[in-house]
Image 1 (cartoon, helix red, strand yellow):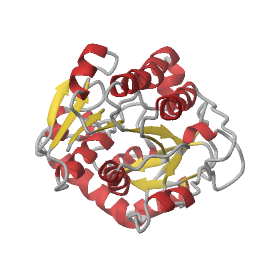
Image 2 (cartoon, helix red, strand yellow):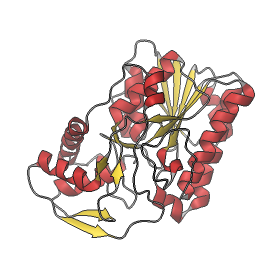
Image 3 (spheres, one colour):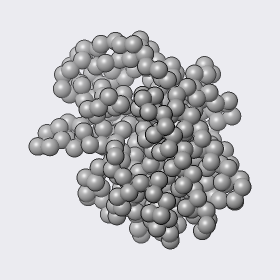
Image 4 (spheres, one colour):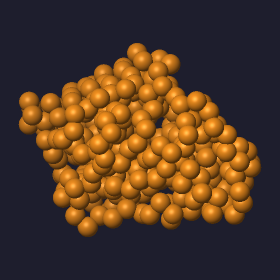
Length: 321
């Protein structure tokens, strides 16, 4: 089986390439990445071929997907604040890029597993958030992700393609980047904690998230690829946990072994107050798949950042969020 992973040199992508390369049923893994946020070093010890280029290059994209048995589409311009700063670039990468990937796969009916986002739910107060809820995007990033998953589902309905749109929640773990304004909350907190710097909290810290360890995420995706799982509706890819940012800080304090200073700042435009996944559909499609606990996942994540920071040139700053 040949599997193409767009965004394959990024945080989730490189973790997925490793998982796929270790599966006996997968003989070839190809990562397509423009390295705008990913890094070639993420694939250095993985049996995967890196093709440097953009999903917006339709000729290159077609060449890469030809002969593939499945495509996992993770390439995106991440971050809500980044989309607020440049909505057009966010739309082109996330919505138009997804359409290009689908069109490249349509000719030969190549199955596509694509990443959407829990941000499409918006500020609806109902918890947990289930796939039947109305969507209320509150940022250009969320709007682009909703457009992307809509194209995925529409191609399945219109052309009979086997597609699966997975709504990621707050994925964290090794290879996730820090050191920039758009860093996700867990790498930002862990990096500050290990450097003994104040942890910056946007809002009051009572906002909640459904944190999902990257290893749990990529195992579900690899299962979907190997078993040909497809669905005519979006599927949450998280397991129904709910942790406040202040609770997260307490867990990190327990792991690092010392108190952490916290600085509260204004909430950011587009941020959602609470997020928690309903996981009924996920568990129906992937029975028996259980997530790593937040305590264990954080411990592994902190250990990885500690090791990366000891290297002469830290690998952390180049990783994709």
